[in-house]
Amino acid sequence: MAGEESKEPLSDSSDECSDQEPTWIYYRDRPEWNDVVPVELNEGPFPVVSIAYSERFKDIFNYFRAIVLKNEISERAFELTSDALELNPANYTVWQYRRTVLKGLEKNIQKELSFVRRIIEDHPKNYQVWHHRRVLVEWSGDPSSELRLTEIVLAQDAKNYHAWQHRQWVLDTFKLFDHELEFVERLLEDDIRNNSAWNQRYFVVKQTSGFSEDIISRELTFSVNSIKKVCNNESAWNYLRGVLAHYTTGLNGHPVVEELCQFLDENNSESPYYFAFLVDRMEELMQSDASKRQVLLPKADGILQVLATKMDPIRREYWLFLSRYLNSQFAN
Image (cartoon, rainbow, N blue to C red; front, top):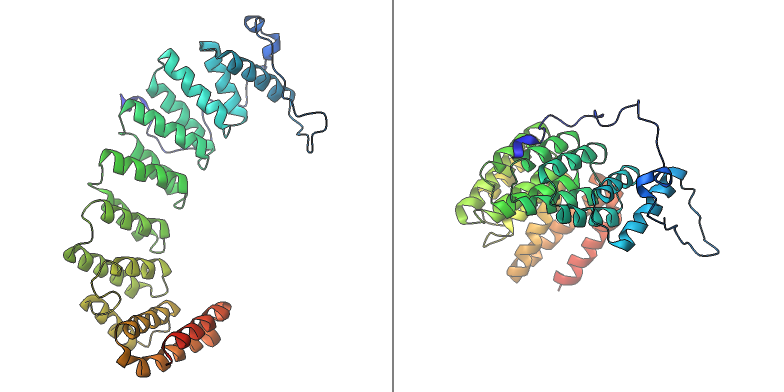
């Protein structure tokens, strides 16, 4: 079944879209549509911004409005939605009505998936087309093409939110997590700063093993190794913090993290992400043990001053705000 849909990489063009398009015949000139009275768009007597729709656009959507009012479930209505989507693939109403016709006519879902794929080729960040695809997969119960499709889309744009959202839904709904960490690691090998891949790793761990003590150690080791390769990688630092949120003593105390801090100190690291991490570690200790405030507060404030004036002056006001906040909380 799923094999009917092409799995070739998405391309910039399609056999369905040729420069040699046949001469367009307006719906108003088609004999088979003589029984339908088109419904024009009513924008009122004084439209604020009147859109200059093409004649073809007005013709198609005038007839589309007519069949919706009639609730017509037919092959011609189905073909009309195809023409409407060619002109405006982000029109949610057209997609919704197309699903109504699909069900009413019991159309082949695999053919519809192929149709959707062609639209994704040209409009990979179209929310409506991805939603339509999700509904089709729900109806068929067959997710076999989805991971490969999203992999191809993400190869073209690793931060395509719609593709990631669809992939996460497929993984979670059909429990297809078995090889997802391997996929994420391949992405991070290609681009260690790929924040979307780091986010996906967190999602997979959370939805599968959870953050047990062993998993926390494994994930901390993974993120620490990445930080040692590229210290100014904000994505890896954020991941480290996310994992430590599940650790009993927070940012302090885990041997993997303590070894990282020692390593960065010995190598005189000047990463602003490391310095910000140190400040948060100190704040955490001051909150849990008041006796440490006298020593740690001046250190934290000194680091914030360095961040504000030398390391990250573009966020100067933010670091100075944190300095004032820490002093208001712990100075007394």
